[in-house]
Image (cartoon, rainbow, N blue to C red; front, side, top):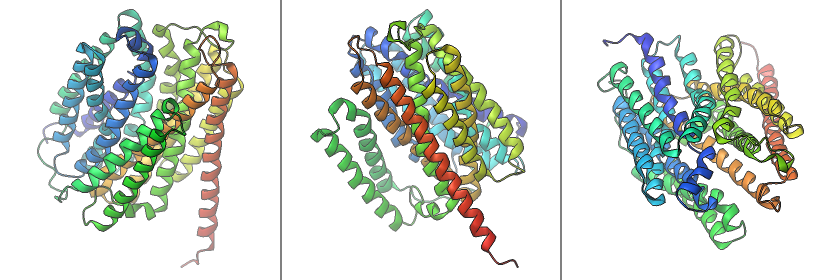
Length: 466
């Protein structure tokens, strides 16, 4: 290898930051897209839905491919497609072309699992755990930076400049990957047939599930479209599970879920993913709502993104602390600690959210909890699965975070839709109720994790000493 290994982790983190930059081109820009593209806000929301659907399909595929020999080529190929998507969205003459660009950008969801697989392969054994923790919280840290940048660019110019910025960032990430990541195939990787049947079933199953969840508030939860879509997703996912358990080389080895730490990390991903999205979306809404609502801070988009900056600070600090504590305590203990911090943040926002400092404090504590939890999840999985299955296992954890976020989206949309005032803005009661749901969800996850930890301690205490 011609490049020093000391540059590898920073290069992987920089590549993973592209996920955060593209993710920030979401909630803040929906009103701008609606106005510029001359479509209703409900239609503009598809810029989020299509990106999510594409990501749900691409992430497990990229995770399995990252277990193969061509990790660097996979990362470069994904970044190239994201670059094309960013340019397409920036140049889009109409909303249809814009959605195509957003779909191509969906590959960003699979970037982090690929970088983690590269770190597991090339980083020294004594530093790999800290590297994986840093990569796993890159998205959270980057969102706190990406949202202010998006707000500044979109507020000063228009939404197209925000997508041009994303394109330039992804292009620079491609250059960094070419120069720093080791070239050539990974000779240690297993060469096995690709599970095309499993990929198709999982992609369709996740796609229909996320579609039903995302569009349920618009279609109506009791409508034939919503019920039919969700039932179809259940059938497809059940068929996928049956097929995966029978195939020799599955897309995702579901048998690793019998490992308690892997199951713990994945279950936590769903719950905290939903709670986190509720907190972020409501904080963004409160920041931009007019003061006449009684809770709104009336911040223009150019400044609204800055309410997410403390999230970045908190997740960065938490990651540094986790890296120091990882050698002194069990990683599984960090999950309930992180969930507890997120429950505190959710409760703070539930009780008080009408002042800027309250939102900023809530985002800071959210960042601390999220950084702790998200750093522990992939590290737990990496410690519990074989190297050749790391990419697919971590990518599935990422998918479950996405599924959790979709549930958070649906819950937020349903509550807000039922609590909209005559001025077409959510009522204070709707905002408070949504924050309450997020806080209670974090608390439920925290209690479940603590019960699991206590049960594990009791079981270990009953084992006979050798």
